[in-house]
Length: 387
Image (cartoon, rainbow, N blue to C red; front, side, top):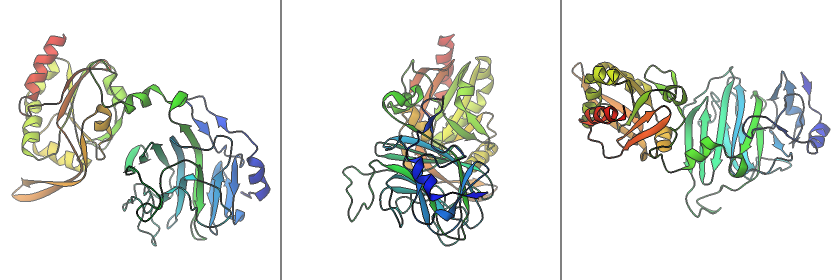
């Protein structure tokens, strides 16, 4: 371990960022120096160790001041490790200042177990907060921050944990102390008792030449027949990652979005797919159901109705939005009687009922006026005509 001299930070402003070979990603921190970074107060709070940038000490902020700045629409990815009862933050759209908490930009909170602040990892600090930490101390986890237009999406370990859409015509003032604009990034040393490490800090600018084909697809208002199937990863009803690219590449997959587990129409739709499982299998069809329910809700729903196909949890409606399916965010409750007791099931997104058929990676059918009970029968007729 060695201390970072303040002069090294100043010299870093003259050095170029390193561009990786994969789709416009730029490496902002090389793991061995402060190329492109500048510390304000208390430079002794920062150390380099084992390829990571670790903060421990008095309040201090380290700003990216390299040639890739400023950033407006971007995707930032970095790995973070927190020690117990530690607090830190990742700022975007900010600018260098000599002392104090950054006045410009937004802070994405880093706090899994810090007792003195209820705002946990994934919070857009004091703008839209997360109260349950999605990561654990003493292990590396991936933080992803995406800003595009008026929208901010924050993910931890590949799962969306927060989403904020800035109101139209927002101006700094009484209601909006911070507004989206452009600027640079900063990392925060919070206090002498906090220890947080950062590594593998990368960014890619969105829009223009840096926009990938996948991003261009996401930017569209849903999908149409003939389009490539959207790419996403969700948790299945066993709690495992389910990657669409792997499952959509070959064969026929029916993806049906539905509002909620344990509700009337959704139960009829699921049970029809269950009962028709054999016929669908003979046609070479795999069925996947997606709603805004949690993995736990899906497990109970699947067990109670003996469902024999996969259910995916889309608690923030991210996959639905990629397909263009309308989503309403906010907690809703469905109730069911299980073993003589009424049980409540809370979901965080309500997704409209749409069905898609995907063949060899392409969308071949879209139905946004689904008859819940008759959906499976309609799909069988459609697939027979595809053969």
